[in-house]
Image (tube, rainbow, N blue to C red):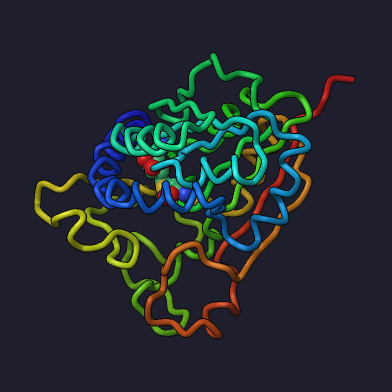
Length: 274
Ligand SMILES: C[S@@+](CC[C@H](N)C(=O)[O-])C[C@H]1O[C@@H](n2cnc3c(N)ncnc32)[C@H](O)[C@@H]1O
């Protein structure tokens, strides 16, 4: 299957997952109205002082828009969210309408982000379970580069690639016995159905044979950094963090889990012409 077909199947799967996000609209609106900022602790250091430099932030793979709208509470003057899932974008629109927020939403494959957004972003923000759904990371990095203004920044905060190899059900780090996972260097697409109970509540997506197939793949840290470099961006900083953005290992004690990185940060800039 080609990239477009795999992404299209992921759209259908994420439309199912959006049931859970739709249930959280009212709670998210209350959180955002109270000034909430839905980020993990390491992100705040990279997203500092947005009011001083960020007129427009574009959030790629914005899901239900909670993080996108949180960028306004961090100081961005306006935000744009892009997501392939129709239902996620509906959820995001419902929240921003209630908040009368300066936000625009586009339903699009990230690789087909509209050209109307070229060169408008001071910040492209993405992550927390984003890049593993993309089958062509070099094309993704080229999209980021075309969206940024000269001098604009990419901030990516995502699951650390080493997370691909571990058994999610284990109480200590142990290679995943499932042959689809467990190998850091594997470039094969892993296809699955259903959602982890600790991510999407079990009743949000009934597990049936007809449930949509979703496709993910591993990107090594070097593949990620090299895609960003190949798109012409300058990598400013990489961070590796023990912090997790979801309960990936429900049976692992925190003091064990935090001995290896669970997430990483990548900050890159688009150069200004000389
Ligand atoms: C784990 S979520 C992103 C994290 C987000 N912070 C959240 O609140 O869950 C992954 C998102 O990526 C979107 N997505 C997956 N493949 C995509 C693609 N090719 N283009 C755009 N969005 C995509 C899904 O629809 C989903 O909303």
